[in-house]
Length: 88
Image 1 (cartoon, rainbow, N blue to C red):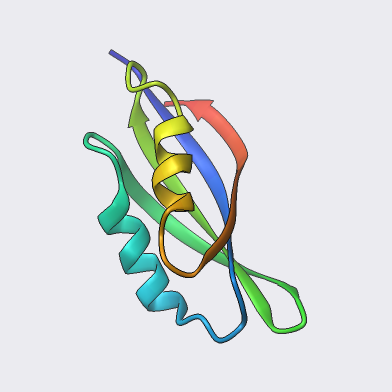
Image 2 (image 1 turned 30 degrees about the horizontal axis):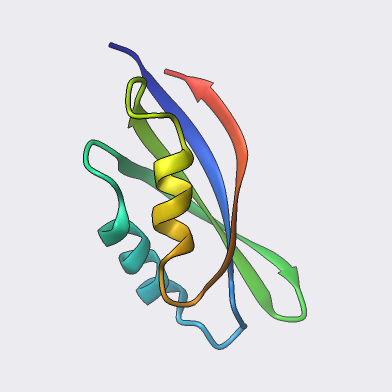
């Protein structure tokens, strides 16, 4: 069974959102079998910083949809999108 690495883009609702806490909430929201490999941060605009967690998911877990749904429901998250996906 293969695994997929997906680099997600998570936009916080405002610059006031604590990114360390947001990162913890994202990790805690992950569906079973998924894990965050690393998290990059990039300045977007107006003091807003986007999180780019790279999530490893099993191939048979429905891809990134479950992760997108989980992340979208996290407090402080404005939007979630897939930045890039690749097999590992």
